[in-house]
Image 1: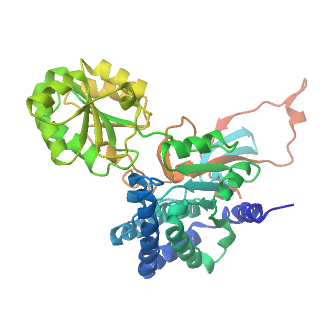
Image 2 (image 1 turned 45 degrees about the horizontal axis):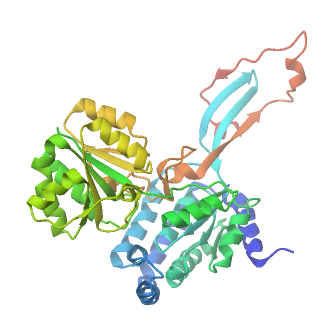
Image 3 (image 1 turned 90 degrees about the horizontal axis):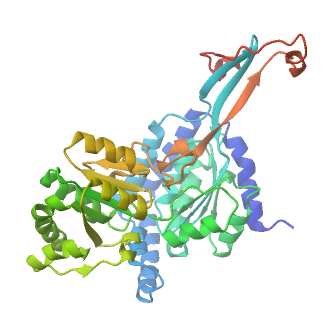
Amino acid sequence: MTSDIESKVIEAKNASIRLSSVNTAIKNKALENMAEALGKNREAILEANKKDLEIAGKMLQENKLSQALVDRLKVNDSKIDGMIAGIKDVMKLDDPTGETLQCLELDKGLVLYKVSCPIGLIGVIFESRPDVVPQVMSLCLKSGNATIFKGGSEALNSNRTIFNILKDAIKNTERIPEEAFQLMETREEVMDILSFDNHIDLLIPRGSNEFVKYIQDNTKIPVLGHADGICHVYVDNEADIEKAVNVCLDSKVQYPAVCNAMETMLVHSEIAETFLPEMFKTFTNSDVELRLDEKSMGFAYKEAISAKSTTDDDWRTEYNDLILSVKIVGDMEEAIDHINKYGSHHTDAIVTENQQKKKDFAALVDSSSVMINASTRFADGFRYGKGAEVGISTNKIHARGPVGMEGLVIYKYILIGNGDKVADYSGSDAKSYTHQELNLKIEDAL
């Protein structure tokens, strides 16, 4: 017997087929309606979020919710403006579907097209952040993918309000099937979603390390995401000090509760005496708790700066808070070895003026984003010009790093012939394949 939950999933799966054929102009009209609706319903969103924050505050006091999740839960006018801007940016992006990626003549009159197409039904399971709903819904709609959303209970009112506003906005848009977007709300529905590998084509989890790891370990559905965000900044002995201070401070302090914030700062021993005392003061003035290795601890003692000693666990920890581990290294090679050993292959940075070191660091650090003289906080779909992001992937699959619409499309092969048969290409009088690249588009052939 089909459950109510599975019925919703099947509805969305069936709607994904219809959504995949909707043209760009119609999809952009739906996006325009979504952006306008968020602006018109600003007060309703803020009121719903206020309810969630009151509940989250109690959960925080009872140690049932982390401060990082509470921070991500907050919605204000600025965040709503960001949601609207994100949708409008997606409108400006090229439609990634129906693009001819390759055209190959197999023989005269027998032509093979490789064409981009939507993945199908995307499941998005996330904690806390209500802005995930408009980000992902806009990207999925533009790329022709149906979407199942499952948010955390801590953001129930915010998610429901935003989702309903967006769904109502597209309800009357020509050819957009409203069944393509579904919202799940109960805890039990998570396990149901994870079991629907015969319906859901891709899962995108957004949340804590433990949360993402749980999703990855409990489903057969392909998962796009990352469990950890252990990011580093290496300050080289040929670094510009002012640049190093700016990059390190921004990487840690600008928004510490996110996956692209710096968790470990590595400093070349030759620059430590010049760089660390002032850097430590700057961090302390920004309320950063320092956890230092034995060598860097000496510089804290000299400046009477309070700090804790690091343990091996610190190098493997994503704090998501104003806490920073610091280690002095002998050279760039040691820094790279540390990053590749303890990092999560998310985002890592170097500050140096040496061109060869920039090149070597970029080549040897095995991370989805590598920054040269720039903050790790730039690793973001919006900042990368993707309009928004569905998530950040450290996988080495079809999409890596901040993932926008390019991670929501795959491709299919379309072969156009004229009664051709394989038998003609076998045997003693077999015809030969030409396998010639052609500069043709599928839209001109169909």
